[in-house]
Image 1: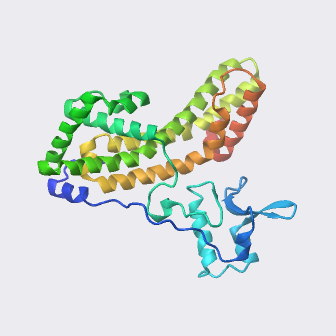
Image 2: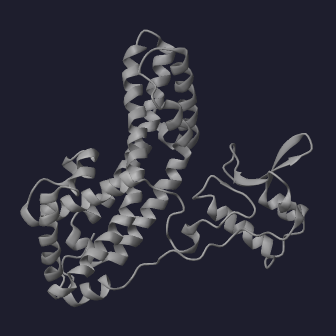
Image 3: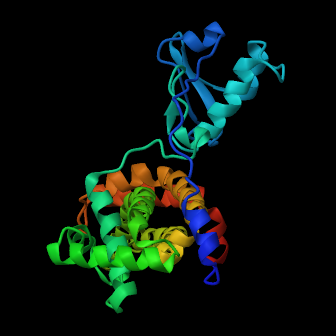
Length: 331
């Protein structure tokens, strides 16, 4: 948590310490001809989750582990450039689902910025959340946690709110020990905070989709109460899915707690940005596993059907594979 005893002088030096910005793009440029095969791609193996090089070998598609790849093509020397690139590919697959030879290195590995995109809507929601936090700090109004995403997206565009935000900027500058003419510094720092929190808003939406899957399953549990086999599978799926989704929600809540008080967040902005990025990457990596399941359930009604029963089976297999530790207490 932020330290409320931070002194004004320390706050000013922390505010003016710029966090890392986007570095020049760099590519996975391999030298060995095995990496020139058309259609080849690096990805995580569906069975083991280990990084593999997926390549066509005649009539079959082979997934070569990096150990096998190094051994078969003489890339075992620690200082071999292609071998070092393979290590970087393995790290990069935590941020993207597939990497092709020649692709750019994920920016998370270069400078800490995100390699995936967000929408203007997510940015508006992030700015609205910060704006509401400022208003609460100024006047004690309701917090951003009590507002819908639509309300948050609209709030920062309200003309009356904009005037109150300007007053908040001046108060923030004074709170942080800055002279009135440096109010613009506060605006710039808030923009940086909004930039980082925009990714958290995009992730919040994906976590909410995972929560909706559980809620649909709970409604289906009642719909299938007379079919013991399907009902029990739904029960097991809910029990396995609930803890990891709650954990994702907890990480989002932790970011809200750390950044909800804008003045405190700005006092240690570089530290807060580092924390947001660490949480962003952890959430993004976890949610990549959920993507296929979330897409499959999108728009599916909580009604009995063969499609729903297939989705229940697929979802159970998914949660049983990735979250088996939770099954110890399920009998």
